[in-house]
Length: 112
Length: 230
Image 1 (cartoon, chains in turn blue, yellow):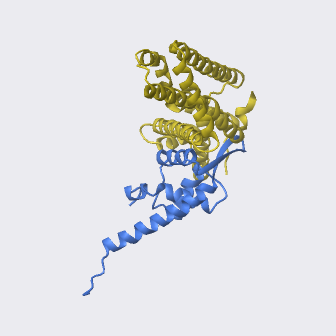
Image 2: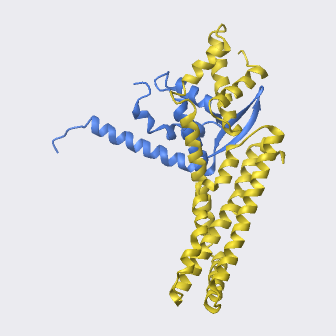
Image 3: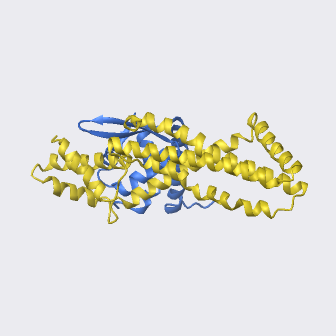
């Protein structure tokens, strides 16, 4: 199941949701957090995460902050006001999708 | 947790540079990512060499390395630039700016209508456009050169400004506009259309080289203090 295509379409929502529960996060931290939360079931690849973050930043859903940590610069992402609103929409879309899929893969037959 | 030294960080910058990422704003994020990955490996096994750990981290970016990532970032930045142009452009069709837009169209219409030497109006306005454009690119190129000379850093952000989010080619069609205006039969309708078209073109150029870069620079400088040396 690891790195299944099914997860890929939800990457943006996953990133937005994670950021909604943290003040700010950096790329590597996001990959590790997802790995830990899913107990290794879903690993975000670097090649997918950064384009997604950059796209969200360009769309104004994320703002960035450069902070010097140890001996290097770190780019932190945080949700903008617009990003917070979009997170609610995306989560609602995802929940609707999950609910529809549940009906499709596990239909309840009735005599009505 | 074992930490990377300054020397290691320098090596990582060289590594990403060797893998065709020459922009500092892109390099920095990749360097931090690789550094975190290497430190994580060292926490599990302190015997892994820096080079081995780096290769393991790099492989996670796939067979094309950083290429796709950079490509996607350029696309995202260009889209953002064009979106900003469009957002500003729309404001010229709402109150109060629409008065200015309509006035400019009326002014050009009047000039084209009453003057026999219509191409003089066209050449003067186009000439002014080119002066604006060349001044903008000259200043920007000088800034980029100065910034690179003083800090050794190149920024993808600057490259995006220079390319105007990829629409620079659209503006270069102005070079050929004279053939269109020269061949135009000047009736009331065509004069009005030519005036409106010309004003919209000037408006787009003004937004692309003046309003949008200023707004984006303010935002980028705030986020990246290292960009602000000049």
